[in-house]
Image: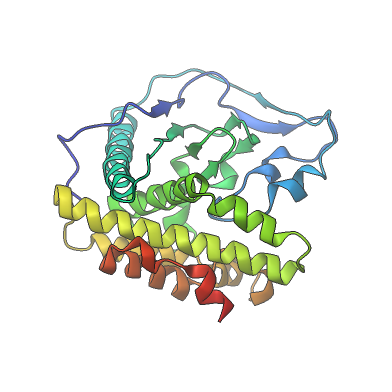
Length: 288
């Protein structure tokens, strides 16, 4: 991916290497508050349901916190993430304006090991996630090593770009009211039906990631050979069926919250091919 030498976002918060980045430990009721986090690549739970499980005195703290200087490689990684964030700002600013709307740019927080958010505390085990309460995306870059080593995704810059764009897609859904509408629709539903709505939300975020890639290449000419394949490889690796097969040895479709590998690749590719946000009604797709 061609990214060097272009604008970087002013909305990046780089907390790597700062004190408070140690391992997360439990407090209060003993229930880890990272369960509150929604929209991560490996969760998808309704925060209102999870919060009901946590007592008022639950808390998360960090230990073994140290402050250290970032390596040259880490500095370059931050520059890359900031550039991708700037690209998402440019694309979604344009799309929102074309539809008579105003895009509110989110923040993106890079952290190491653990982080505090308006949705609660989280460890890096959660994976990248979007917190609607503070409208920030949170990422520990160690996730991408795990994505490659544990789940078999290809490496490459654009795999990272896809994940960022997916989480920004959740921000778009938050701004458009889709996330709130989905959560309301989940009320009173069986777990199977509620999970189906979560899948629709996640697949739409994949679609929005594809739409972003479509316009980013059209505007900035960023794509190189193999980039889309890297994104599709990442989408394949984080399908519910692939994750369940690797982690528990069996596939339970009714428990899916993000969609199969085939679905995730399909919707990213559809967004990239069409560039048309009106074609991303994944809720209608899954209701058929």
